Length: 317
Length: 281
Image: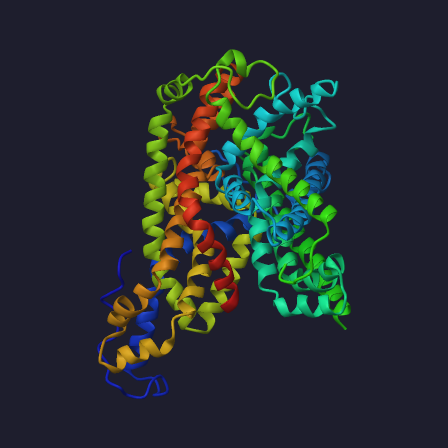
């Protein structure tokens, strides 16, 4: 795994490079390339590519976690069964609401916060420090922290509501509030990174554009609408897409907050799949769920991206 | 912004209100858990929004460190995070050079793989990964976990590092080989030193990722003595519940500190790296 010294090329003079045919030189270059790539390629193949392909394949089998179990190819049986699995599709819908809300609301809040950080206000350095903490925090700690905030009997949220005479709410335990409460935590933990990236995007918009717009008499809001937002669009589209995927595939925060409860109201698909695979030990069926999730992400993403880029083009012409 | 127009006062007031709202939203929960780690259990179990503890209690930290093998879990986490960091740097460096400089099929395949890993849910990969590790006798070992962490951070580190490599002028390398140095020498003496900022970012990123990671550790580790910090903290939550809120908060605060320190150095480089990767991506 260490330095790829042995296979590297011998010292070469100032001879013309690359174009000479299939000489020993080219062979040496090939060996060189292999030596550079092998240390990373090996783990990638063993721990990423093989599992990835095997994962897709397992969805078409009846595999279970039991040792020495016979694994049989059963075609689309899992998918047929899955199509009628109401619990899975409920979970799928919850996943869409969760990931979609978190991505959209994080994107909007991040634009607002980035605009504030990009203007002449005080406390910006304080904000920048505070923004780091949720970003760096281990997801498990985020979960623990918000369980304390939401706690029915000792949480500061209910205490603050009490000042206004509002009754205690069981935020994470109530059917109607659990999913929104979890979504707020998703936003909290994703907001810093999205904001910093958007801020970088904003600062790369040439200042002259703003000055020109200001000279034409455009006020702040109009400059935002006609200069900042169009300039930011590519970054914004990329970030919200990535946020969506990450949250759709995310597991840790919701697991620690609610474990999918109450009554499955926050049972996002990765959590549902995890329980199927490692609690019910039905890894074939669970993999089929995973396959459906991949397809869904690709589909949603392509629709979203095609739409966004089309709008962008129309907006520009 | 960079115009000379004066912002009207009401707008400024609104801006400060909005900024204050964001600060409250982002900052209050953090302050709350820090304050909870200094509160007595009686105060923790009462309904209040007091940030300043009525009486400062320091036993939460000692209790946390004594119980639930938090300290040995922290040791496991540290070992895993440092090993992941070292191996990831060693492995990323040559591969990112190859990705940036040797064009062609490798580069295309690398890009496809990097994108694929971002779209595929970990849950789909982890089931067969569990089987692969079982076959290699690496399941329920820290070594297995380390190798998996290295692999799972590679998409990002490779993407970021190849941006840094692409920024090194080719002429420097050509000049080196003109002087008769081998490719290897050129890499070690000319290219790698210029990549130091990128390598630092890679090292810090992999450390924080491994230190914070929860899901893979949850599935791949079964023996309690191998548990990493997030797993132990989570178990703490399940087993002890309300009564141990203080020590739990203390443990959670302690677990965040290493990430926070590394991350405060990392953050600028990370966003820089994302952009660097994007330029040549």
